[in-house]
Structures are given as structure tokens and as C-alpha cells.
Amino acid sequence: MSIRRILTLILIVSSCFAVAGAVALVALTTALRGTADDLQSSVQGVHLSEEARVDLLRWVRRSDLVVLGNGGTEVDRTSLERDLHARLSELQRTSRDPVEQGLAADAANRVTEYLASRREAEAQHDELSDIIRESSPQLDEALRVLAELTAVNVAEAERATANARRWDRLSNAIGAAVVVILLGLVPAAVWWLGTGVLRPLINISRTVERYASGAEDTRVPPMKATELQQIGSSFNALADSLREQRDRQATSIAEIAHDLRTPLNALRLAVQVADTDPTPETGRTAFAIVRRSPSGSNGWCPICWIPPTSRPDKWSFASKRATCGRLSPTRSSSTSPPRRGTACS
Image (tube, rainbow, N blue to C red):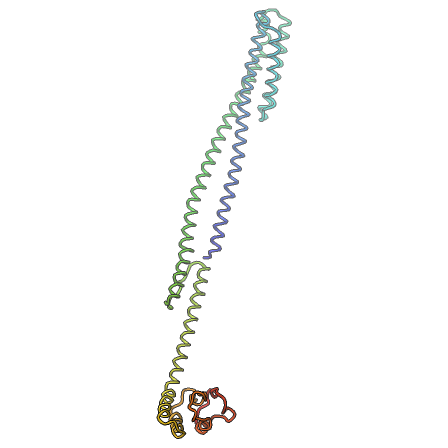
């Protein structure tokens, strides 16, 4: 399990949800806008068709009054006719459905036919009953078409309302699904970050602190995350390497201490002998004690490389050369120890 891969996956999933939410929001907004436009057009069509029917009936009523001579004037009838044609033209212009457009055009033609037949009947007959009887079929047909147009617009409005309700339910479902997914995804991501990343990092930090405080056997336990496992393995390898170095140093120091124990004891005894009577004879006796002492594991005599300034003035290199047969004449004035592996004879 890699932290980088999981974080990348979380980022990709979150981005997909964000993009899906944005696309769904745009689609829902577009659909609702189209539904609202359809509903508005349908309502306007119902309004215009009903207004056209009312204007037509008012025109009929006004025409009857004109024929009867009971307060009606030709100016009023012409104004109503102009308003009626304006409403029918607007109805044709605002129609969006082909069926509605066809009905609007048919209604305009029927109304025009009725108006023409009514004027023709008024010109041919003087009695109102004859005029109505001759023009009533065209009036009934015009009113029927206008009623059918109104019914189409009402059906369109109901269909737009149903679509709006459906889109509203769909938007609610999408919103609830996004909320549920986020409520499940965010806590899961936080839990994973806490248990899979933060807690192991805290454990590694505490392990390093314990190691720094002196618990040298402390090691980082295995981790599930690949990156944290690499960090733990590197720390454990470093701790093991430092432990091996300390073990080698301790072993080397123990060997050196063991090698120096007997020569130093002999040297201490020789110094004590020389301190009792610092004469050449005593010096030779001291060197004889050192010479008879067992050499170290490297087989060299520690007295052979003691600097002249650390010896008594009566101990010359001549006496040392006489005592140590392996000392080279060319190094008689040197203060450095002989080559390792060289023993005094």
C-alpha cells in the first residue's frame, strides 16, 4: 500500500465527484430552464387563446348591437377586430410546438373567415336572426379551434409542470447521493490518514526519541505504507550498522587492553626497580625485567618506543640498543615505535 497511490486515488475520486456534480448541476439547470420556458410559453398560449375567444365573443356582441342600433358603433367593432388579430398574430409567433403553430394558424384563418362571413351576412340581411344563422357555422368552428388550442396549451403546461417535478426529484436524489457519498468518503479518508499515516509517523518519531535516549535495541516495527516501511527499514539498518560498529570497537578495545596488561605490569615493575637506585646497573636490571616479560599479542616491547624525554637522563639509547636487539641503528634517534610485529629479543 502506497501513500502516494492512495492520495492520488482520493484526489481522482474527489475530482470525478466534483466534475460529475458540476455536469449534473449544469444539466439540471439547463433542463429546468427549458421546462420553465415551455411552461411560460404554454401559460402564455392559454392566456392568448382565451383572450382571443373573449375578444371574438365581444366582437360578436358588439356587432349584434351595431345591427340592432343599441349603442354599438363601427369604431368599437373595428378596434375589437384589430385587437383580435393582434392576439392571434402573437399567438402564432409565440407557439413553439408544430401542432400548436398549426392550430394557431388555423384559428386565425377561421376567425378571418367568420369575420368575412359576418360582414357579408350583414350586407345581405337586415334581420339579426338571419345574420346569426348564416354566420354561426364559421363562428362555431373558430371557437372550436380556439378551444382546442387552449386545450393543447393546457396539456403542454401540465406536461412542463410534470417535467419540472421530475427534474426536481432527480436533483434532490443527486444531491442526497452526493451528500451520502461525501459523508462516507470524508470520514473514511480522515480515518485512513489517522491510522495509516499519522499514527505510524508518530510511532516512528517516538522510536527515534527512545533510541536517542539510550534504548539502542529499539527498532521501528513493520509498516503497511510503502514509504513509511522504507523509512523504518532505513532507520533499522542504520541502528544495526551503528550497533555493529560499537561491537567492533568494544572488541578492539578489549583486545588492546588484554595485549597491554602484561607489558604494562612489567613496565610498572621495572619503573619501581629503577626508582630505587637510578644507576646504569639498575637500568639494565629493569630492562632485563621487561625483556623477560611475555610480549603482547603483536610481539613487540612497549619499552622500545618510549620517547627519550620520558626516561631518566641516565637511560641512554645505547643501553636500550644493547637491551633490544631488534632495534635498527638507523632508528636509534627516532621516537616512533617499531613496526608492528617486531619483538624485542
